[in-house]
Length: 279
Image (cartoon, rainbow, N blue to C red; front, side):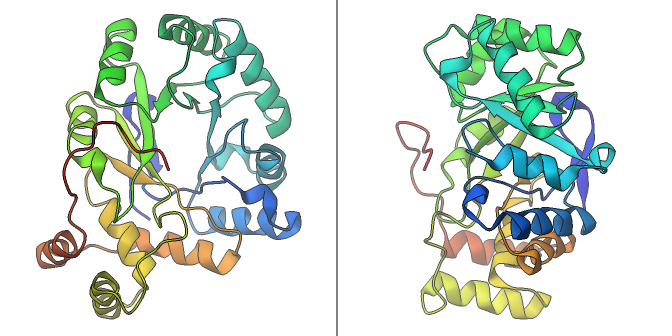
C-alpha cells in the first residue's frame, strides 16, 4: 500500500482508506469484520461522520484495541458547526467512537455559521488534544480561499470531495488549488453511486482490458486512476471483507502513461460545472 503526506496533518497516510457512509445499513458483525479486514490489508485511514447514523459506533467497535494504528477522521454537520457547537459535536463523536481524539475533523460542507466560528472551534479542539488536525469537505475554490484567508497557510489538512471516473469536476480548479496550497484531496464515492461503468459499455471495456493487464479488477483500475496524483486519496466503502482486500490491493497498482491516456479518453472530465457536485 502506498502512503503519502496528508496535507497539514503532516502524517503519512495510505492512499486508499475506508469510507463508512451507509455502512450502518449492513449486518453489524459483517461491517466490523470488513473494517478489520481493511486494517489488516493496510487501509488504516477510516473516514466517518456524525450524520452517518450508527457508523461511528460500528467504527469504534472495529478499531477497539487497534486505535494506535488508525488515522481516524470524522465530520461535523454544518448545523452543529458554531464555535461551541463544533466542540460539543466532536465530543459526542469521540464518545461514539470510543476514543479520546481524532486524527482529523472536517466540516462536512459549507453552512450558515460563519467559517471563522467553525475554525475557532477546531482550534479549541486542537489545543485540548481532542483533534490533531482539521479540514473541510465539499468546498469549492471560493470556500477554500475563505478558509485559507481565515486560518492562514499550513492549517487545512484536506478537502474531501466527490470524485470518480464519471465525475471529475474537481480536476478543473479544486485539485489544482489543493496542490498549490499543500492540502490533501480525499475523493469519496470512487465507484459512483450505483452507476459504476457496466462491462458492456465502452468505458467498461477499457477498464476490463486494463484490469486483465494488471491482474486486478475494473474497480482496482478505477482506484489506481483516482490516486494517480501525489495529492490524492480515496475512501471506498464496502461491507464485504473480500472487497475490502480487493480495494487495498489496488494501492500497489502503477498505471502507465498509456493506461492513463486510455482512461482519460474513455472517461473525459467534461466542462467545469457552475457548482461543485456532491452526489
